[in-house]
Amino acid sequence: MGTTEQQHHGATDVIAAPLLPSTEAPPRRNMFAFVCATLASMTTILMGYNLALMSGAELFMREDLGLTDEQVEVLSGSMNLFMLVSILAAGWAADSIGRRGTVVVANAFLMAGALAMWLGCGYASLLAARFVTSVGVGLSVVVAPVYAAKIAPASSLIDFFITGGILLSYVSNYAVR
Image (cartoon, rainbow, N blue to C red; front, side, top):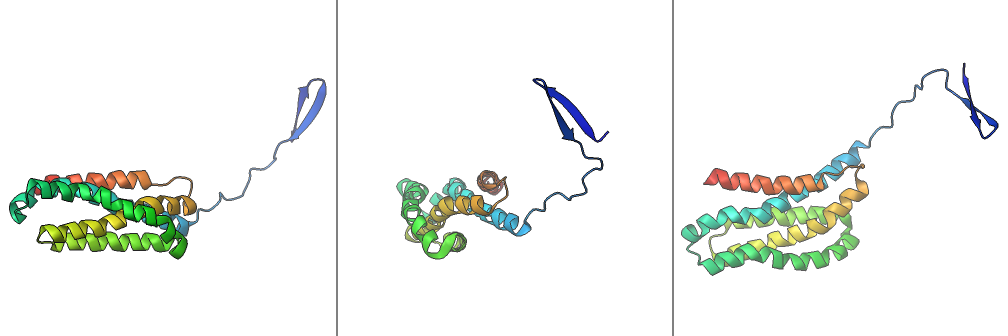
């Protein structure tokens, strides 16, 4: 009963079947790694939010701050240009202070930029705040996926969080209208 015989090209193989079911527990997931990967992935929520936030703010900046169309266009498109600086420096930063430290620095830039945009009252201050935010976005777009892939379990939530951040900014833009 405990063995099974199979015929294979004239040879008989004996395969031992287990008599009792296995009592081994399934392997435990490392919750610390999962939490770290989730937090690194959530950095991309801020990235997606900051990338798409300007679309709703454009409606009010012309009236409230008296900006011209050209100034609003520069503010909207400046993030992609400013990100180049931090994207090029992200590898060096990750080598110098580590991936986790770079994710923390990216979050600090994202939060400082958001605060500066909130306090900004003119074109120059908003452009400077967009630069600060762009540094955080550039660092997070390079380092957060690498950090999450290194530490994460098999599935990662980075793409979900980027899309969630963009959706969150569009929902908040809609709610303000």
